[in-house]
Length: 621
Ligand code: SF4
Ligand code: FE2
Image (cartoon, rainbow, N blue to C red; front, side, top):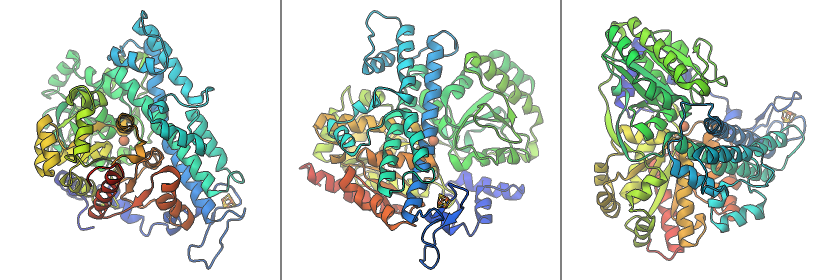
């Protein structure tokens, strides 16, 4: 890798970290070399205390563990555990939002009024809840109860799967992978992977798909839809992105993690006159709240809050020396942050009882008392402004404007109230297909390079891109979320984007908001009377790293969408599992994975796949 990033702000702060003698993820990656070959292939197991065991990939050593498990069983079990962990993370996030809605409806969370009553009624109706003649509180209480029931439901399947086309649902039923309760699938996956339970790799992978589907059409969908109800459904919004959003003369706060419950309230708390006066007293001209990763995406989608960066920039924000507090909730928060903060004046403040960090200050967040806790946290940041060490401050000037906020509702509004113009554009070929590009950064790969190269190739080929998570932030930093980026698109896509004044890459939100992409895909399939697998769609995670991304990949192919992974998953120790995922799955579920580290070659795969689907639908390739 010639350079660690394509992002100039990142490169400048990596250099500063070196000067300040601060170790970053890239340094720790070097220290880990060579990384464990057994782990890379997925052939080590420590699921019981007869082990740990490992299979010799060269065939010279043991080909089973002590219990007799072979490489197929071990690789498939490890993969299923990763999916379960990812699904658990997204779904527990969803549960937290549902609990907040429940508290709001009971009048126990006064700082969380319902912001989108129309969406509350629409989602309640989907759940068969009567809305006519009832108060918002009554509807919200019944909906929150029904949603919380989805985690261990007795009714046999999840509600939101009914958005999927009937062909898809029948296939899930036939394969026995219709997701039942969300918690049930995660628990069953842990049960099956316990020593001596499910040892058949096909059976394990099918359970992986079912667990992942309980994430995409369950936990993630709940997180998205209920967040919209509570915090407002995103509408197109403009903002600014990259480390250059930090202000030399303001109290800088980074909101990092994933859940909007805390971050949304901080945005409002930061407008408090008393706190602003205190900031001014300390010599700051204001309080600058900025986002990072997905909790940043949540507040940028709804409030246009400046976004400081994506996953690999969390340490670098502290390295600027200009951040008074990094306030974190859950997921994708590097445990290194308090240590790095120790080299500057930054306070790392953890807020979730589920996520504590040695060296961080823990201020437990309480949704019943949200505004008060938010102000308490902000006060700590304001007070810390006096400790800023001017000689250590260097904020890169790099910043870029973006347009985001493309919820399904916003997309429909941009299209004039119906999906028909998009479907017509797909039929005519001015838009050849749609690609969902999602996922993380990974220090094994040049930051943002794969995201941006892959996406540029797609739009050149008239493929509309919908993006979430750190992939979307990569695009924001590079100007790809501006309507002007359509100049880089093929003639067909360019004309469509110019006509609607939208960018060729639509930012649809955080990682749980991939459920928005599923909803759009299902709606297009339903409008055409076909399965999702028949549509000219692809999914891609060019720089993925987390277990959540494994679950996402699995529910995207489980939903019938060909998915390209840009970083290699630990499954190559089993030829059978690798073959099932990259080939056999197509016959079973109508979609498969491809693994391609080169983003240009990955784009070729996407273009070819979309052309093939178009021909099958009777459209011009
Ligand atoms: Fe070894 Fe089997 Fe135990 Fe895994 S479950 S550690 S392969 S004995
Ligand atoms: Fe995320």
